[in-house]
Length: 552
View 1 (cartoon, rainbow, N blue to C red):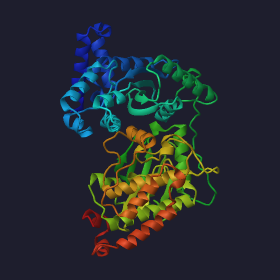
View 2 (cartoon, rainbow, N blue to C red; view 1 turned 90 degrees about the vertical axis):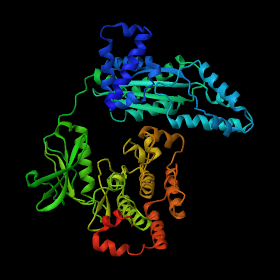
View 3 (tube, rainbow, N blue to C red; view 1 turned 180 degrees about the vertical axis):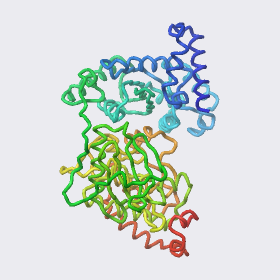
View 4 (cartoon, rainbow, N blue to C red; view 1 turned 45 degrees about the vertical axis):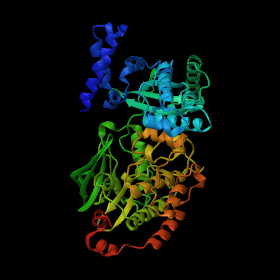
């Protein structure tokens, strides 16, 4: 279906460009070149792109071609765009009962047609349009007409399109770059090609002038400044990395794991028996298996994806996991550290993840069960924080359930870190939908970043929904940082639980509670709520997950 849609969009863009006699479309190879452009980008590109602006596709194609030259990266284009809210008759009436619907609706239509600037390349998502509607409502309530309102909102914004080689933390660097020059991101679309390049499109406001040359110059200078500051180390925005042919460190024959000499955790790979594959990712696979007759989970790194950086991440995960031992933290059993067989072995959690239970099995947590799960998570996280370990990727997918012991455990320490002596850290990590604003912004952060993520997890347990499900992860991140966006708390939520969610989501990390405080709050609510009739009996007879699947 997606491939069919991609073909339809390609055909329509091709037709429009040929009908307009665009010079590029006169080339004999143009049809094939244009199809190659669509084919190297994900299907989402064809779904999102505005076919009425076929020439924008050529801009994207040109930027991606220019990005092949390492001396020119990153390449970018700047233009003025017009973002207008969508109105219907009812919306016009809702603004002011005295407004004449037909006259103003006609004026709105005329204003849209008379706009001197094109719309954004990817149209306007509902959240950007709603921003326009809200701005107009405010202006109308101040006593102006609907026409004044739309004129007030439809001030031009700027669309900035970047292309470079696709690298980790690129989005973080681009958003930081825009923030440095005083721009506010209102809309963002990020695409990665199948040959290692990126196309990132931002609709921004905050530039006070209706021009592009000065803004282009300021962006160019800011990029040069970033490169100059990073002259002693590689920077994803800098072409110097490839020009200077910086040599990668050779892969060592043995991964060195910090040790105090008291733990014996090195596992002989030959003693592992693999049974079924549980999950697969870009960098590794997860298997169910056995080790010395014990049922285990085996996370294996894909040999072809192993780099020096990944070996460091692997070493860090082993270093942290071998230090921790708690009922609500997945138990580390051992690791194989001799390439190419790099793997981490932990206890196997037969109940699967909380994410799968909520979103794949469509399970439901009633309040008593929800509180028990939340208390288990808080106990595990409190233990980690007491040992100066920041998880950095707390989300439902990393919370595992054991059906027999009726407990939930914190797992996956792939991006966890031991807290720095200064008490603050900087890095882009985790997953945008659960990420604290200070982490998204690449600012210094501490253990309170985990508290924010816990608040999102708690909301997930409460609603069974994916956070910000109608937004892309990047749009959600922009909303959290710049708009103070948070998930909507259901009206029926227990008042003390709603209050706890609000505390966890505070923009200022210092205002968020610690897990020790969260535990006390949850235990008080649990005592107040009590168990539903028959809950405990069912747990003992058929396991925690069986109880949950019946909705108790």
